[in-house]
Amino acid sequence: MTNSIKINHVKKSVLIYFFLFIQISSFAQQKNGVAFFTTDFNLTFKVNEDFEFGRNNNQNFFIPTEILLRVGFGYEFKKKLALSFNTGFDHHFDYSIGTIPTYIAFQYNIWSRDEDAFFIRFNAGRLWRFADRFSDGDYRAYGIGWRIDNGNKWKPIIKLMYHQKKVKNFENGQINNVSLGVGFSLY
Image (cartoon, rainbow, N blue to C red; front, side):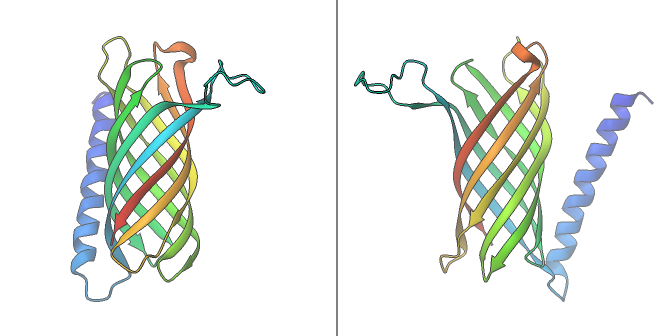
């Protein structure tokens, strides 16, 4: 068996076990956690090179460089640790590149009260591209966020994330940026 076949087999096995665990946990008598669905919208920004302090040249200091749309589902254990499978669509304005990230997210609630939670998050997965001029790549992200208790099942989320996308044949071999995101989780 070649290494790529072994890696694909391991990835499929991990996903199957993850889905099976969520399914079994949802039917268990004693609830140690809760399943959830999540969606969010993120924008990344950079400093506008045409902006000049003290001059009114109708230029904004920050300009958007990327839009990220994400959906996912997962399971939160005892209001502390959440694991989820996510996918989405990223569009990079500067490079006219569209990509589809698929990743597993690990979230740890540093502080929580009722349904409010302040958390740290780590995403790891694969980046699939639309453009033939670039190869598929690896995706990582780290960040912090706040889930807000608003009294219903749709909980608003605010996140600040650092994204690292490693892509062969790309200048510097990667795209790094910081995004500000808003979204919702359904519990």
